[in-house]
Amino acid sequence: MGVGINLGNTLDAPEEGAWAPVAQEWQFDDYKAKGFKTIRIPVCWNKHTSETVPYDVDEAWMARVQTVVGWSLDRGMVTVLNTHHETWLDSPQNFTANLPRLQMIWAQVAETFSNHSANLVFEIFNEPHLMTADQLNTMNAQVLPIIRKTNPSRVVFFGGLQFMNPTWLVANPDVMKIPDDPYVAVEIHNYDPYHYAGPLPTIHSWGSPADVAALQSWVNATQQWAAARKLSIYYGEFGTTSAQTEATGRLNWYKAHVQASLAAGFAISVWDDDGMFAILNRTTKVWNEDILAAMGLTPAPPSPPGPPPPPGPPPPPPPPGPPGPPPPSGCPGGSLNACIALCPKTPEPVYGELTTRKKTICSHRKG
Image (cartoon, rainbow, N blue to C red):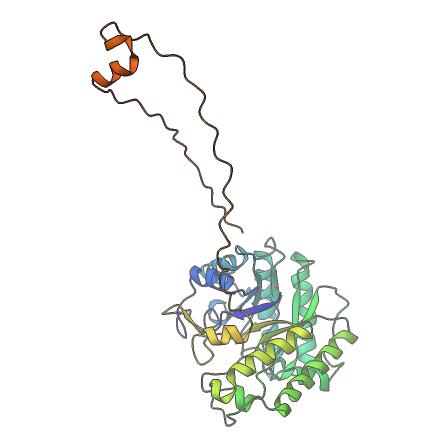
């Protein structure tokens, strides 16, 4: 999965276009051109799903999600699809009554995407933080079998409590129940330290040896937790807001997080939302090239042209033509050269070869 990016504030908004421009196909061309391998597509299903049995998802919305997911899969990108901002379920009081609705959403999503590429990954629930640990385990245990009915070998991500923070996993190593399923992996999110990376920061410096050590500490602990359980880790959200600058360590923060995560074997996706965490301005189509470079994604400059090829041997002389006609009797002295000098010149025909070429462009069709 490598280095990826989030299509944030888009399909996860109350209505597409409310928080950021609507998704467009050119973005996925840009993502691929910049070197991203994974696209995470957060989706909020709440306003597009009936609140009564059988909890039907609006057909137009499902078709729109299919279109956007297709743009990613068509370009060979690993694509992560989830349920996002579903606050109606993340509540100890409302969980039991509302869980059947989430189950039916996943039944419809799983059926709709059952024949899609294995590059599509499902993420059951984004950032649970209010439900209890027992409710988290109940949700995973109820939803995974629904997905498996139609997607027996699709990768599915579980996430822990405290907004999927890895420190919760390490502090509660056996609380989240992981089934015996080779296609289950774990997703983490971390904007660390939050008072630096999050909105309205109160810390305005990052990059000291202590800062780097703190980063490496939680990465190592998470890697060890996962290795003991033979699980893969997807670092699905990270980033800093534009309140931080190069002078306050923003570029060093991105560079250090990418390097530490990749060294630990994590797949990663940076948060990009066309807002405080923007890396791509979706209106001007301009990228923050400094952040891309810090993440190791800026394409290398083109190689200089090589030396010209050595000259080949001269072409062979043309074969001699057939002998010309005898000189006309009117030529002086019977000489053909003398006759040409006296007679008007007739241009000789020139023959060329017309070659046509047909170029065929093939197009190739986050979970």
